[in-house]
Amino acid sequence: MRKSKYSNYKLLPFDTIKAATSGDCEAISAVTQHFGGYIAKLSIHPMRDEYGNERYGVDENMRSELEAKLAAAVLRFRVA
Image (cartoon, rainbow, N blue to C red; front, side, top):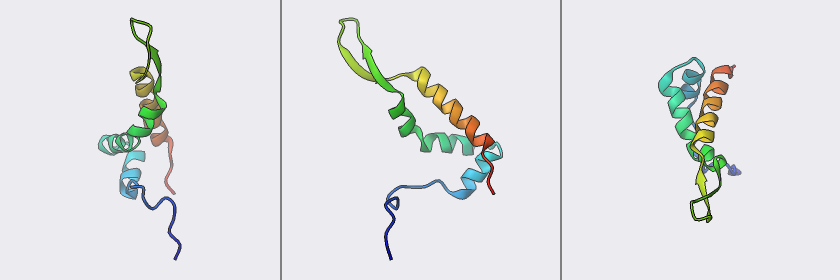
Protein backbone atom coordinates (compact mmCIF):
# COMPACT_ATOMS: atom_id res chain seq x y z
CA MET A 1 0.00 0.00 0.00
CA ARG A 2 1.37 3.37 -1.02
CA LYS A 3 1.53 6.15 1.54
CA SER A 4 0.05 9.50 0.52
CA LYS A 5 2.34 12.51 0.59
CA TYR A 6 -0.34 14.34 2.62
CA SER A 7 -0.58 11.71 5.39
CA ASN A 8 1.56 13.81 7.76
CA TYR A 9 -0.94 16.69 7.76
CA LYS A 10 -3.68 16.87 10.34
CA LEU A 11 -7.00 17.30 8.57
CA LEU A 12 -10.17 18.88 9.89
CA PRO A 13 -12.87 16.37 10.82
CA PHE A 14 -15.79 16.19 8.41
CA ASP A 15 -18.25 17.01 11.21
CA THR A 16 -16.40 20.27 11.89
CA ILE A 17 -16.49 21.23 8.22
CA LYS A 18 -20.19 20.40 7.96
CA ALA A 19 -21.00 22.40 11.11
CA ALA A 20 -18.96 25.36 9.83
CA THR A 21 -20.85 25.42 6.53
CA SER A 22 -24.13 25.57 8.44
CA GLY A 23 -22.94 28.62 10.43
CA ASP A 24 -21.72 27.19 13.75
CA CYS A 25 -19.44 29.89 15.23
CA GLU A 26 -17.20 27.44 17.10
CA ALA A 27 -16.69 25.34 13.96
CA ILE A 28 -15.85 28.43 11.88
CA SER A 29 -13.37 29.42 14.57
CA ALA A 30 -11.82 25.94 14.39
CA VAL A 31 -11.45 26.29 10.61
CA THR A 32 -9.79 29.71 10.89
CA GLN A 33 -7.45 28.39 13.60
CA HIS A 34 -6.57 25.41 11.40
CA PHE A 35 -5.52 27.73 8.58
CA GLY A 36 -4.04 30.38 10.92
CA GLY A 37 -0.43 29.59 10.08
CA TYR A 38 -1.05 29.74 6.35
CA ILE A 39 -2.95 33.02 6.72
CA ALA A 40 -0.09 34.47 8.77
CA LYS A 41 2.40 33.38 6.11
CA LEU A 42 0.35 35.08 3.41
CA SER A 43 0.17 38.25 5.53
CA ILE A 44 3.94 38.67 5.95
CA HIS A 45 5.55 41.49 4.02
CA PRO A 46 8.53 43.83 4.44
CA MET A 47 8.12 46.86 6.70
CA ARG A 48 10.44 49.70 7.58
CA ASP A 49 11.04 50.88 11.11
CA GLU A 50 11.78 54.47 12.20
CA TYR A 51 15.48 54.04 11.40
CA GLY A 52 14.86 52.85 7.85
CA ASN A 53 15.72 49.23 8.56
CA GLU A 54 13.71 46.68 6.68
CA ARG A 55 12.13 43.81 8.60
CA TYR A 56 9.40 41.33 7.88
CA GLY A 57 6.22 41.25 9.88
CA VAL A 58 2.59 40.20 9.80
CA ASP A 59 0.21 42.87 8.53
CA GLU A 60 -2.68 42.55 10.98
CA ASN A 61 -5.15 44.27 8.62
CA MET A 62 -4.37 41.83 5.84
CA ARG A 63 -4.60 38.90 8.24
CA SER A 64 -8.03 39.93 9.48
CA GLU A 65 -9.24 40.44 5.90
CA LEU A 66 -8.04 36.97 4.93
CA GLU A 67 -9.75 35.45 7.97
CA ALA A 68 -13.00 37.21 7.04
CA LYS A 69 -12.75 35.98 3.45
CA LEU A 70 -12.14 32.44 4.69
CA ALA A 71 -15.20 32.61 6.95
CA ALA A 72 -17.32 33.90 4.05
CA ALA A 73 -16.03 31.14 1.77
CA VAL A 74 -16.80 28.50 4.41
CA LEU A 75 -20.38 29.73 4.63
CA ARG A 76 -20.74 29.55 0.82
CA PHE A 77 -19.22 26.04 0.67
CA ARG A 78 -21.72 23.24 0.09
CA VAL A 79 -21.10 19.74 1.40
CA ALA A 80 -22.54 17.05 -0.84
